[in-house]
Length: 96
Image (cartoon, rainbow, N blue to C red; front, side):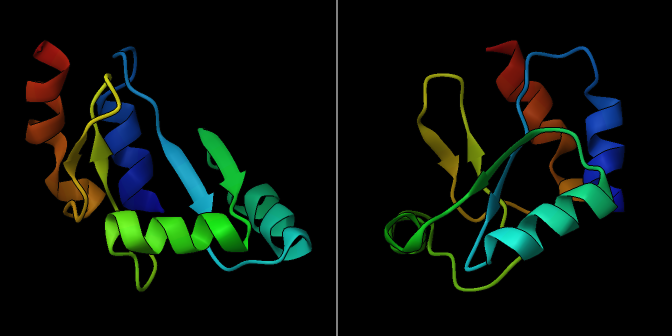
């Protein structure tokens, strides 16, 4: 998660939301990991139905998996590069 933290630092103050979805995880383990990693952002635990939807919509088959969604909810990139490689792409989207 260090690369995600660095990206968030670079984009601090910008109108951007970081979403984290727990994928095929148990609630207890998910809560423990959230506490240990102390990663700021929006966190959601996906249930079985949501997991299947994520797999179909984004092609998720392993983690970590990154996607970029614009402020209108349109998928810009369902298989985005790792956080240390998307900074410029996000800056362009923020200017729109």
